[in-house]
Each structure stands twice: as C-alpha cells, then as structure tokens.
Amino acid sequence: MLKILSTKLKEVIQKYYGYISLNLKSYSHNIKSDVRERNRFLILSLSFLFLIDYLLFCYISGRNPLNIFPSLPLLENKKTVNIYLPDIDGKTILKETREISIPDGNEGYVKLIISKLISGSTVDNTSATVPVDIFIRKIWFQHDTCIIDVIPTLLEDKRKFIPGTEKIFKESLEKTITENIPNIKNVILLDRGIPGRNLWQQNL
Image 1 (cartoon, rainbow, N blue to C red):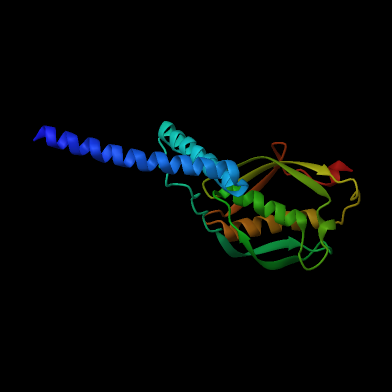
Image 2: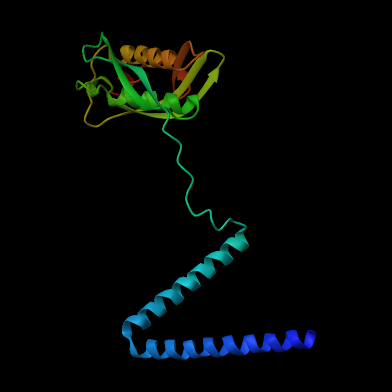
C-alpha cells in the first residue's frame, strides 16, 4: 500500500515538476524578449519583497498585519460659548458668541480664553484694549477659585493704553471663565506671583 502511494506521489511530483519547469522556461524567455513583461516581473518581485518585509516587521513588533489604517481621529469637542471682551471706550464689556474647540482640562480652557481676549473682537477692532502680550507662568485651582500667574510684555506697536481697559479686561476675563467653567466662581490674576499689580501702566 505504501509502495503504491509512494509511486503515485512520485508521478504527481514529476508531472507537475515538468509542467512548472516548462512554464518557468517559457516565462524566462518572455522576460528576456519582452520589455513590458520584464517590467511587470520586476514590479511583482519588488512588491513581493516589500510584502515579506512588512510581514516580518509585523511579526517582530507583534503588530496585526491587517491593522494598516490609522485610528479614526476623535471628533472635535466644539461648543458654543460666550466670550466677554473689553471695548475700546474702557467702560463697556462686549459679549460675543463663538463656536470654539474645547481643550481637555480646565487649564487649557483658561489659556484659550485668555488668548481669545488678547486677540480681541472678531467684529470690531478692539486689539488696542490689550496693549501687552501675556505669558502664562502657571494656572491652578483652589476650591472655587482660578489663580493665574502671568508676565505681561508691552507690545512695541502699542505703547499707549486706553484708560480703564485693564479693569474691564480683568472683569471680562473673570466673567468669561466663571460662566464657561463649572464650579469656578472667582479669578485671581497675579503678575509674577504678586496680586493687584497694574499690568500695563507699570510697563510704560
């Protein structure tokens, strides 16, 4: 029985070996004589090598070879909020409703609010109300209070300031933060760790 199976297996191998050998010789001749076929062979060979390299990399790194697509990005956490801004008269607080992307964490949210106040209104030119660039040293929270330590730097093109705008800026900042961040009722603004400083007049 085993001898019969062995004989049949040899016959099958010889048959297919001859068939494969004949086709390989024919294909080799086509590659040498036909430029298009040769280019096709090179492209297929390189693709096969790249596939083998990719599979080896996945095996070494323990990665699923089918996981070739990046994860879907999280949808932006957009929210419609009220932003309060100082007006150029130094007395009025402007209210603007904007749709903004809310960052993770209250600290990032406070930084975003400050940047919005510094940039001014999207409707009117109110940039002159904040004649300084504000570098944020630290933000922390104690109970219902947000404490912001900053370093104000006078902008070269804004050496003059509008009276009253600093007071309105602080009020706008506190109003925007307390309205949009839950549980925050008070805002303390420090200049290099010192409260109560005049942020722009001292820079003149």
